[in-house]
Structure formats: structure tokens, C-alpha cells
Amino acid sequence: MLNKQTADALCTVIALGFMKNNAGETIPHNRTVFQYSGEESKASHDTLAQFLNDKIFAKQGSTIQFSEAPPQSEMPCIVGKTRKISENSEAKSLVDDFWSYITGLSSHAQAKDSAPYGAYIGGRASVGTVDIVGPSYLEPYAPTWRTKSPGEKRDIDTSYKKAVEATNASINIVKNISATTYKKITIRKGDACCIRPKAPPLADNEVFKSYHGMIRAMVAYPPGIDTHAAYFEIALGVNTSKVSSCIPCSIFMSANEVAATSTHLGRGDNWNIPPGQKPMTEKWRKAVNKHYETGMILCGASYSEINSLKTALLESRCSDKIPDIFLEALTFEGPFLEKINRALAIPK
Ligand SMILES: [Zn+2]
Image 1 (cartoon, protein in one colour):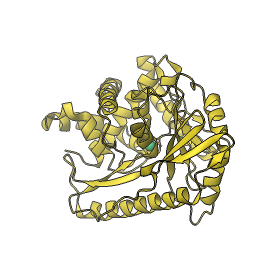
Image 2 (cartoon, helix red, strand yellow):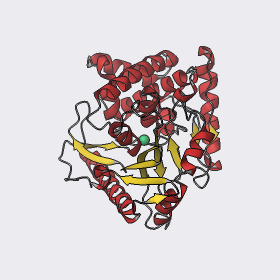
Image 3 (cartoon, protein in one colour):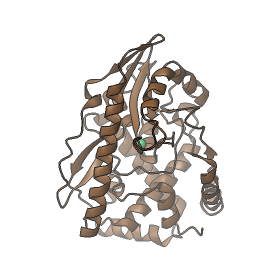
């Protein structure tokens, strides 16, 4: 049922629905901002915003805007907003408290040759303490909705190998910086933060799950118990320049009322949810279904790739499994910007 076309179409529908529902969100800490990194990305985002606003959002009384994210040197973290931290300036002052720890981590990851790509360290900050949860964790699995052609097998093996290397490199950096006290903040490393993925070779039918640091932190310390707590994800080193959450993380965060300080249309490749927090996963499932429905209304019948997706879902009678299919759609790798441009056939 899932191939690159239907997967990109599904990711597009859910992303558009999320944009619309996010714009209608009235509580500041439930709302994210969409951003891009670096001046060179401005033109592609402006083109997309103009198309979406003219053809899709205007009819529904909504708009989308992309702003430039602050550079990593100014804001090295993504923060999950809370009632106490509903503005990006408040998130910045939270981070100021353990800035020297972050600088320590980053300086270990500065050398361009050795800095891992897409390396983020998740954690949770509260009064006087910072708990480091660790980088993305990886697990192979056999998918239900997609197959893997021999050509895809090579690419998936390569990206799995790269992901394992990035995780191991990030763990080495976390290990190198001793858990200590900075100013009045005690940095603690959780038991799981330096556990390396087992990383067995992928079987012929297998793809893999990636549990991002932010989501690992949320699952390890469910929201609501400590009202002073805030989740963060540190961008590690010069090769991880996007200090924004991926769309899948952002959807999970907003669904659990800790919206990301910033969201980008980059990659959310192989994103998945660690086991162990059913209530949070249920909220996420509800949100994904809602964004899917909104996205389908937004797109109407005007886009052939979206129409093909609708037909494919109807034929395989799996319209009630959208969140599960979305997870597998994310195993077809690529930035969301490209997925949306392709699925809506947006002229360049
Ligand atoms: Zn993410």
C-alpha cells in the first residue's frame, strides 16, 4: 500500500493539517512557529508559503509563515513550551542556566570532520537539575504497510549505518563531558543515556525506528508531574545546524501540550515513539488523525498524488490506521519541504 508517492502524500496531508490546526491554537504554549535555518533556505520557503497561502490556506481563512531560526550560537536548544515557558525568550533564559554545559558538549563536537550529522541530545531541566536522556536510539522492525525492494535495501542499510554512527558519536561526546555542577545546576546522566543501540544488521524485510532525544526525554519523564520541568534537545556541533524540531516530533510535542519553540520542514526520517507511555501515544494518535482529516479537507480533490493516496487507503481498507501508516511513511526518507513540493506538484 505504501510506496514513495503515497508515503510523501500522506506526510504532506498530515503536515498541512498540522500547520492549519497549529495556526488556530489559542494557547501560546500549545503553538509552535515554523522556521528555516540560514538565509539560503529563505527562497524555497517563500515559494512554498506563497503557493500554500494562495491555493490552499486562503480558502480556509488561514495562513502559514516561515521565519528564520536564530543561529545555533544564539539558541543551541529546542525547548518544549510549558505554561511557565510559553515564549522563546523564556526558553532562552532557561537554557542560560546550563549554557556552559551545552558549550562544553558543543565544543567536543565542533571539528567539522568528526562532528556527527543530525545529532541532538534530549533532556529535561527542572529546578536546580538537568537530566540528560541521550541522543536518538535505533531499533529494527518489520513494517506492515510497505515492502523493501532490493534497490531500497541498499539505501536503507546505508542510512541505518549512518544513524548508528551518529548515535555512537553522540554518546561518546556525552560520555566525555563529566556530569557535574555548573553554577547552581546539577547535571545528571540517566541510566539509559549512554546505552548504545544493539544495531544488528537489518533483515531483508526490515526497516528501522529512530526515537529522537526529545521524545525519549518526554517518555522518560512524562509531563505534568513536575510543573517546573521543561524538555530540551541540544543541537550537537557544527554539522547539526537546524535548531528546530522535525515535524513528527513537533506533532507529538503539541499533542502533549509542550509545543516546540521552533519547527522546521527538514527530515523526520524513521521517526518513531519509544514504548512505555500509552497515554502520550494515544494523544499523539488522536492528533495525527485530526491533522490528517484537516489536511484532506484543505487539499480537496485538486491534487492527483493526494487523490491516489485516498484511493490506496480505501482499497486497502486501512483508513482507520493512519497514525501507524504515517510512522511507516517516515521510513521513506527525505525533507518535508521536498515531500510537500512533490506531492502537490508545486512549480519551482
Ligand atoms: Zn525530531
